[in-house]
Length: 380
Image (cartoon, rainbow, N blue to C red):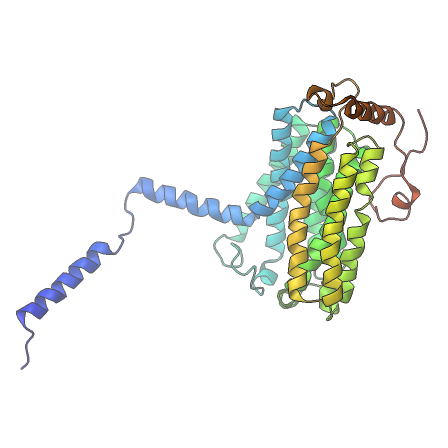
């Protein structure tokens, strides 16, 4: 009978010893175990809330709050309360309810099948409890720390997103336009939280967000149309094999954004520099939409998507940099020691703000602003 040599037996024992030495052991320390459990659930709820998307929503709400203050001094506590309330009610709760209603759809799509609910990492009761607690807490926070207008807008946005937009995705392609209205409400919420009212000036950023979302969603729908088809969603790209119609819709909404910089200047919200910057920025994203319209390829759609991701933060930054303050505040241009011509521009802007903003007929009656109130065409 064959027997192994002593050297062979020694090497086998050494290999087993090294294997058991380097293989990680399960944690037995209760403190370490609790820490890992907290990290596990924190990550799952982070994914359930779509935290990255929620951060973008919070950024638009915070920008609206700063614009709504109308002066150089921003109430930091009010800004924090507004951002926290928006995060809870319009982002975390709405996104969680959206995933609860779409568990079976998400399980069929490659880009969503690993979400916490379809993958079973979080149970439905846990998700429902999280959504209810986050929504109620956000509404109470906005109502107690800001005002009822902001709280009402947050609650309305939650209902519109979870109970109108979400089921509409499986019924009709108009869901994209309804979703654009949902995305336009957070900056309006921020403005209302700062000023306690909704005015024509408060519609500039929501209008930009409304029109911006159309090319953004159209590019995404074209790139992921096989996934949307598998999930049972009714997107415009599924009825447009060539992509021409999808690209035309995106291009048309890019052109709708061109006048926004001039309207912001005419209504005394920003300086004249913003007109130039916003026009150049809008022309850049329109160029990518036109390229997508001409060629209709995935590469061109991806470029339009990337351009849309760059457009929004630059546009909001321009609004904040070039915003004009109230009459009783010292303009930043004078504090910075700029020329008299620059100061004269601010004085002219202040004079424009003394008269009521008059909305051009093309932007107040025949939508492309479906959510604008009737303009007040009178002088005080």
